[in-house]
Length: 527
Image (cartoon, rainbow, N blue to C red; front, top):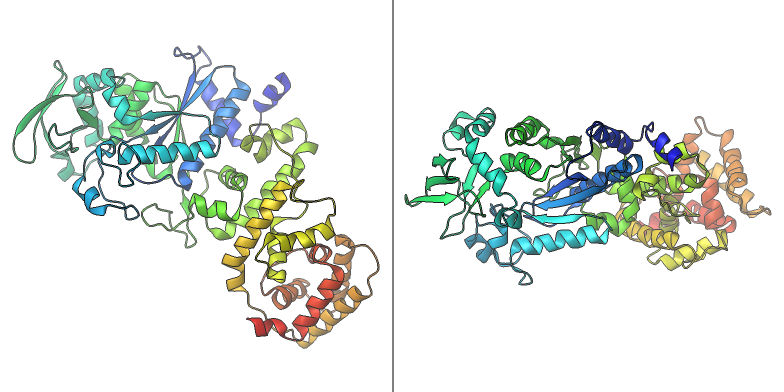
């Protein structure tokens, strides 16, 4: 263990780099609260999404890295801002009229349109917890409604009233002049309507811990800032929560990065120590635009998991978190294959290499064995050639290629075969575009077919790749034109697998038949 810790203290893997930065926070003395606190936040106005997964997964990776290099206990809080007023009605939920009548009420005061929970906020919180539990995350759930109403936040809220002017000074510097005229860090919750009010505050009484305001009808009210009568605007709430909970680490997207000085400043004014931050880049859609929940222009968590494993998604999240990345359906095959490449490499690596391997962080050091004797990309090509709509078709080829494999002994391969069939149906089949070969390509394909028909050796991918090269070496310059022809004529695609390995999997004689069909133009007739 000491060797692992020593190497982790030097590792360049980003979770260890972040963990070491966090450890410096307590190099002079351990935390008075007895643990290091990680936090992730969640706005429960809609269902959990792929960004939620990424934020909790990456925070968990850093937490586990910290536990490798330190004996200080850790906790992870997932905080739901469910006291936030419902600003708009989501399009994808029932009872739109009822929800419209409840606009601006806290989400935990809005009736559940699904009729299953105490409120809409409770419904979405339950979805979040189910979501996190499905992936096995270790966390503690905090509700803003409970946090405000229970008194846990009272001391900080009183302090916010006492230091109101200091906090307002921080906020005013970030607001347009028009917004400055009516802004207050406090949002009263109307005692009668239950709505969160965005109204000017007439007086903040620091001694009494109250605010005075006029509602929309011109009636004056005075409310205590404690006990859930008032909530903080979201930016002050961020910093105040850090102070109240003594948060040590929180990550958030680049769209929050300009607010970091505001969050930190408010935390300090309220007597807290700002946490260590990690700002990650945002995901982009297929057009290079920022993925947005409201636009619905990116992948959902369910969509990814229709075509690939949870671990492949975690692998994608691990890669270069501070670099903006396209996140669309076409990144899935590569993520699947690279995850399993890293998994297969792990047992033979040194400890230092293992600590730098993404799968170490995905699985917290308890790394399973990869049983993927066929790559996901190869399964996709196999599904395409066989026009497979059932993974059993793929298993017919897999068993010939790897007789020791079965769905029972190779569950990850079995799952990948199912994913590949679904991906083929939805993305490959609609895009296939075959063409006839040129005269030069026809001669090369005929040569390859004849070599395959005469083949008597084992179905060895390397040896068969040599035959493929031999057919193209003296005919094509550059050689990539030969492989492009193979893919376009035989697979109806511009890219494809290492062709010798494909022949070994699909079958030597079967590939010869495939070539004959392509030469006869049968695939064009199917288009």
